[in-house]
Every structure is written in structure tokens, then in C-alpha cells.
Amino acid sequence: KIADLTCYDLLPFKEGAHRETREFLQKIVDILLDYIELCYDRNEHVLEYHSPDKLKELFNMVVPHDGMTLQHLITDCATVLKYGVKTGHPHFMNQLSCGLDIISMAGEWLTATANCNMFTYEISPVFIIMEHQVLKRMRRIIGWHSGDSIMSPGGTISNLYSVIVARYKMFPDYKVQGQKALPGELVIFTTDQGHYSMKMAAMICGLGTSNCIYVKSDKRGKMIPSELERHILEEKAKGKYPIMVNGTAGTTVLGAFDPINDLADICEKYGLWLHIDGAWGGSMVLSHKHRTTRLQGIERANSITWNPHKLMGVILQCSTFHVRESGLLEHCNRMTAEYLFMTDKFYDTHYDTGDRVIQCGRHNDIFKLWFSWRARGEAGFEARVDRFMELAQYQVKRIKEMPDKFYLLMEPEYVNVCFWYIPQRFRHMPHSPEKEEELARLCPIIKERMMKAGTLMVGYQRDGKVPNFFRSIISQDAITEKDIDFMLHEIDRLGYD
Ligand code: ABU
Image 1 (cartoon, rainbow, N blue to C red):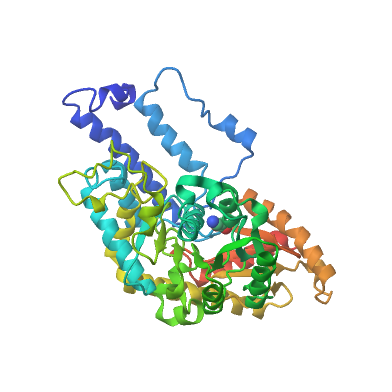
Image 2: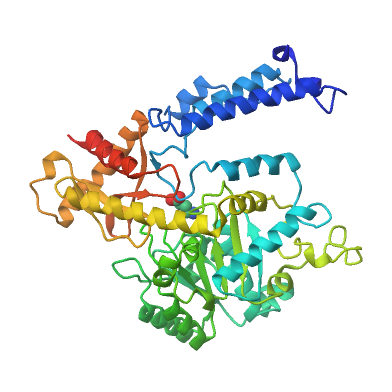
């Protein structure tokens, strides 16, 4: 019986153990299939919350000295899923990356089964060609006929690439000589709404976080171009060397889009690299309806981050980084490790990607993206983006229909809808900064109640001087109008007093 067996009774340890191996895997697959059904079931909870101490008590996760039985491992799988958060549940609106896309999940299963490292064509011939073609297609959609791209472990690393490449473009000797190749301190610019990964990149690249300059945004959260120009001049006057501007396409909290054409004009004027962090909003290029209003000028960028694991719904992780100028990525990052990237290999070694990246081993993130693209086509992705935009507008409409209960922070540009809930006792008060402070204090309380009830997950955050508010995200296919109604109703139920 499988219950008494251990991993040593399976392939490859036990020759001929095909039946046992299949049986074990079938049991795991059955658990996964049951979980998938629960995920989409609106009568099910999004999570079963326990405090960290209680969770440790409920589920002994300590790794043992001696291996456990297969039955134990099967039970572990069920337990892990039982206490996890179902990000594919229609009432999960908490995070930019979420959902349970069946096709891309199947892709991830295949990827794990193939277990091929993505550094060379030698090891991953099919996946490397696939990556080459998909990334080329993405560059074409952006509007480029040249360039190189790479998949990276997340938007933060993709954004880090932008600083590395921008610095190399301006000071190529930095690669070999380090700081001594620089004439002085380098600075980069991003909006005060930009993702913290830019500050992180400034730290990692040795610029120092104080040399990541935050440019003021307007009340919609968009970078103010005149402020950018003022900062550039100011930094130059201090004797510093501006190298790069990061424009954000879809900020994390407000979902704002910086005016790319204006930023591109300024970058051209001062000879700066323009990076667009489209980790969140880059997928808008897929929508004919929305790309012209949100991403006008994107093809003028020098580099772009675009994460299919966000709005395109590809299973985590799946981040892409694109550079307009061909060859730069490779010149910048090439270390010519001769044990791996031999130039005398019998095939065309330009397909070996390892010398374009700052990693050595690289996870296969392409198959699930390719598989999802094969399933939906570009038309399917476009419809998905447009549908989410419609749902966000539906939410806005519903919020406006209940002015006593909800207050919309601003008209959203994207699928981030930011709002306050107004409980009974504040409904008589006119809206004011004092009232906002009161409503802000309730956000963590309501959030605690929703987590403990397990019925809903919507995030809250503060934004500069604006105190806590709710930010709901529509980024997965399971959500419909009735789920948005449920969300608003549930917040009202949990926060009513
Ligand atoms: N990388 C930003 C993701 C944050 C969020 O999901 O809210």
C-alpha cells in the first residue's frame, strides 16, 4: 500500500516502480484538482486564517532527520493548501499578481517536470527558441523592430537591469573599472509614486538610495514633467550625473500612468536613458482601446519591464525585461564563463542566453507564458485587459451609487480602485481631511475582520500624505460584477458599526 511506502520505493530508486510512482503522483494531482474546484467556489472561503503561533501548532512543518512516508507527504500537500490563501478565488482582490489560470498552471506543471535550466540552448532547446520568439513578439507589440529581452525573477530584478544597462550605455568602462570609471555621482529619477525597486536598484548599483530622486506627481499620481526637468537641472548644478529616468506605467497603489512622451522629450533633451516600469501596466499595450491613452510613446523608451504574471494572469513568476538597442544587454552582462558558454559549440551560440543575464541558472518562465498565449491568442489577452477595465468601471459606478457608504479617492486610470468605506457613525460628517483620518483608522480593523472571517481579501495602504484607504485590484478571470457587489457588501457588513 502506498501509505507505507517512502520515496525510495518510487522511481528512480526502485527499478520498475511505475505503478507506485503513478499512484503517488495521481494522489497529489487529485488533491490539486480538488483545490482548484474549491478555488472557484464562491461558497468557499478565500482563506482559513490562523496566527503564526497557531499555524505552527496546527501544522508541524519541521523538517525531519529521517524521511517520512508517502502518505505523510500526501497529507502535507492537502494541509499546505488548506491553510493557504486562494488567490484564484473570485473574492481575492488583494494583489496585482493572483489568480489560477488553468492553462498556465498546467504549463508550470510541465516546466517542473522538464526541470531544464534556461542558460543554454544545449540544455533547453525547445524552451530557448520559445523564449526567443515570444520575447521578440512582445518587442514587436511594444513597437520595436530591434532589441533584446530577457525573463527575470520578478519586476524588481527587471528594473534593476534597467539601471545596469543605462549605466553601461553611458559609462561602458564601469564594467571593468568600477567606480573609478565614473566622473562623479550618478543619479536616477522616478516618481514619488514609483515602485521601491528603483531605490533598491540605486542601492545595489552603488549609486546610493539618496541618488534615486523622487519627482513629484500630480493629484492623479502621474509624474509632473516640469518637476522632472527641474530636478535634472538641480542635480546637474550639484555636479552630479543624471543617467536615467524611470517612468511608471501603472503605479502599484493608484494605477497611474506617467506621461511617456513628455518624459521621452526630456530624456532626449538631456541624453538620458528612459526606462518604463510597466511591470503592472505594461500589459495595456495589448489593448487597442486603452494603449493609446495610457502608453502613448512607449516605443520611445530605451528599456521596458513588463510582467505577464500580473495583468496577463500567467502563473508566478513571469517577468520580462526589454531593451531597444540590440546587443547592449549582452555586452553589458557578458562574463564569458568558459565552462558553460563556450564559443566553439557546434550550434549557433547566440541562442545561449546566459551571458545576457546577471544570473547563472535561470528558471523556465517561458513555457507557461507561451502556453497561455497559444490558448488565448493576443485577441484573448486583449479581451481580458478590456474586460478588467470594464469591471473596474463597474466598481466605480457602484461606489458612486452608494455615496453614504463609500468615497472614491479618484477616477481610476486602471484596475486599481481606491476608496474609503464610511461606517454608519461617520455618514453625517461632510468629507474632510479629519474624516479621512477617521476612515483611515478603520482600514486595518476591517482588514483584520475580513481576514479572520476569511470571506474576502482586499488590500489597504496609505499614499504619501493620504492616510489608509482600500485598494481593490481586478486582475483575475474569476471576478465578475457579482463579486464586486459582494466585495462592497461584505466591507459594509464587516465595517458597519
Ligand atoms: N510588485 C508590486 C506588487 C505589489 C502588490 O501586489 O500590491
